[in-house]
Length: 259
Image (cartoon, rainbow, N blue to C red; front, side, top):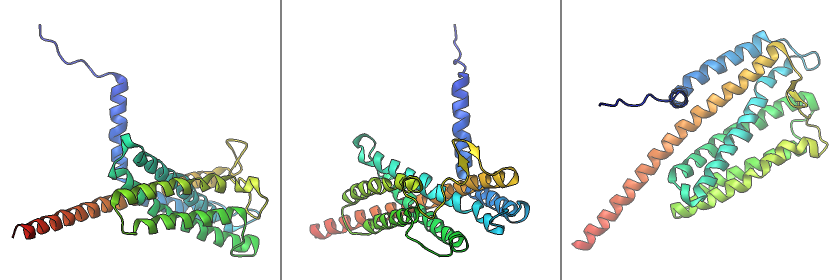
């Protein structure tokens, strides 16, 4: 009796479909990001109404929180996770080190945008471009820590030693993220408290303003995925070129020794 192959279970089919869909979104993250950013700009500038108190200044709401979300939680969360996986002996791989490095570089870009848009918002709202508020100070400290991470990767050293040191620094820097998050609750400063959610999932804003805000989070997340993907691919190529150059130098030395 010939037995056919067992039909895949529904759970397996759904898992495979989700993996395929995730890869498709990952490969098309660039075009998706362009469309979502363009839609966010259109809604934020021409569709949503001005605020009763802040007027048109409220339109920064569709940029500042989204880039801050990417910088603090997506970028540096992924960097910390990749660094931890590199330090763990069972999962240690150069890919995790390169992913952490790529994520930190992109995260610094988003964190710089966070500080810049915050200053643009703070000047008319607070009357100053910068103040040593707890939220601003802890955010600036976080950027300095990750700039130090990037500088450490430029220091000549054994690749594995450098990767281990950078992974430890990334985990230490990530400890500042919860300080940034809770700084407005722990210390009284100029920076406002939660401006979107109150008491869990109760939104302060509604209608087109809410949907535009949520769309901005999705759009910036896709921009982040696309930037990390491109930087990671470049890092892999740079690593391959460096390995080839090292192998070539070793072969030349051996050939010289045999002469």
